[in-house]
Amino acid sequence: MSLKLNSKYVQKFINEDEMNGIKAQVETAAKVLHDRTGLGNDFLGWLDLPVDYDKDEFARIKAAAKKIQGHSDVLIVIGIGGSYLGARAAIELLKSPMYNNMKKDTPDIYYAGNNINPTYLQEIISLCEGRDFSVNVISKSGTTTEPALAFRVFKKLVEEKYGAEGAKDRIFCTTDKARGTLKELADAEGYETFVIPDDVGGRFSVLTAVGLLPIAVAGCDIDALMTGAAKAREDFTADFDNNDCYKYAALRNILHRKGKAVELMVSYDPAFCMMSEWYKQLFGESEGKDNKGIFPASVVFSTDLHSMGQFIQDGSRVMFETVVDIKNPKQDMFLEDDEANLDGLNFLTNQNMSVVNRKALEGTVLAHTEGGVPNIILELDQIDEENLGYMIYFFEKACAVSGYVLGVNPFNQPGVESYKSNMFALLGKPGYEDKKAALEAKLS
Image 1 (spheres, rainbow, N blue to C red):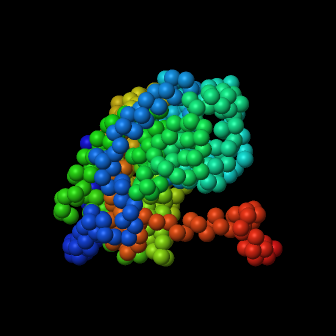
Image 2: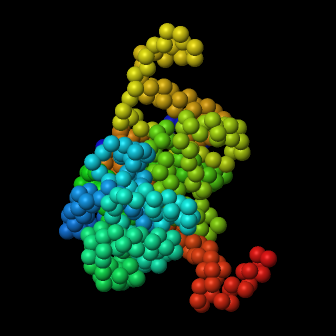
Image 3: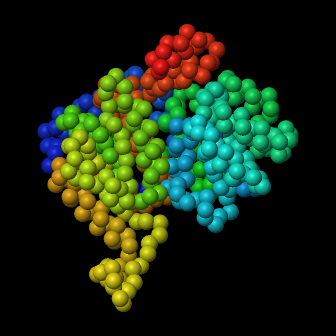
């Protein structure tokens, strides 16, 4: 396992005094985190989760995954935000973004309840026609609008196809340990349940049953995933000078104070796309409050060099890039000679495509830094479960430390309630009558 910070290409933007100057702030933030004395300290269950998790439930997760693999062609994962992003990111990175289209002995996995678009939901339903399917609904309360609507639909479909008794073998609920609408329903109907810990927020929950059950259904090794996270937990308790996690948090905050308001997560592997989506929620929801925060964005190169490259190279200097450099791809391709050479690419003959991708990375880093865009490089040897677990924990801890350095509570999300309140009022939810008229007046 390895995830190494390479700060070579950010040194022209940050000097040694600045790193020394922020060092004490980062160390203080880390101490506050570990002493559990900071804002949001009741949501720090993720901190020791890689070693302090429920081993009995972990065994039940693996058993449920085998059960689903044995009787289902499709698993529908119902959840939104942190309730599905981590699982999807892990599956696409470890397996493939084309996982559902590949030959395999595990079920296809589709994601519902992450939007309110009727066409999307109908298409997911159509993919289940004539196939055996199971449902994993993930919701702390059971009343979040998007997943609750989707679960209402799929619960009915399961019961129509397999009956109420059959549904008990095909509906799995990941929810609160003891309370809430979904927990009450699961207990009443006899569905197997898994726990979203009270002290782990959604965006930090991928290493709980929230992420582990779908990841296991896809055939990934969740033991190795936790082993990698446990190693990161150990490594990233080191002092600042020997801690790449703390240094990453420091670099981000220094660049932010210099006016870099946007962090662009860069990868050179399309399989990393959903990991970037997970990163965007993790950092965006953790840091974006009190009129503060670095805006998280993402690109996949070389694809997006043909769409966003111009802006990054020559546009407003508001951003820095964090490049995830995966040294060894899961597969490679040898480039052969073409006698006609109509495309003029025979100079690439007799080498691997990974070499071309590597030179694209190196050339782009040089071009962008020379253009005034700082580049932080995170080097990863290869993609496997242990390295992914290690990387997940790296980002989670860096996010928490960085949030404390920024001066916010990294574990709440007060801003997400505003749109919900407006939506409920406009839809006529009981109790929102007075607000409905006022909002409609503003819209007219």
